[in-house]
Amino acid sequence: KEYMNTQDQNQEAKKTEAEFVEMLEAQFYEIGSIDEDISDLKERAKTAGYDAPLLAKVAKALSERKADDIIDKNDKFAALVDKVRNAN
Image 1: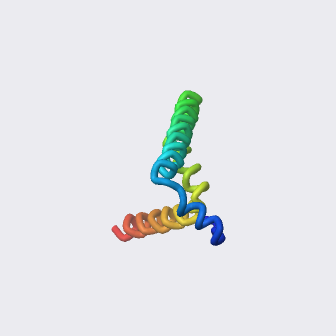
Image 2: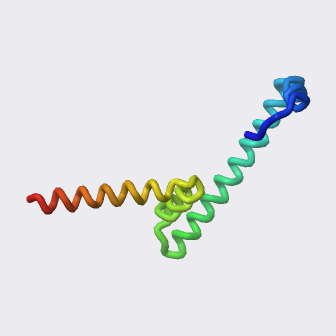
Image 3: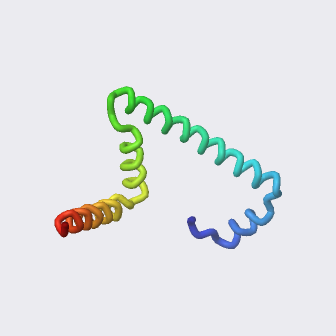
């Protein structure tokens, strides 16, 4: 997270447990809303005839900047399968 100066740290330290619970509750509410939106999008993709789970995996990998790692691992997997098949 972002750097907090001493004044910001002091203000955070003065918050009550109830205030932290309220802030966390708001974030969990947002997560629930986003989860509902994601489910709706996946259902719409499925209805449109797409492989919704695959689309979701690709979107998640892209958003986490992990797509290149996954592609590399899949290429290595495919290469090993080919090597093993050709060895017989």
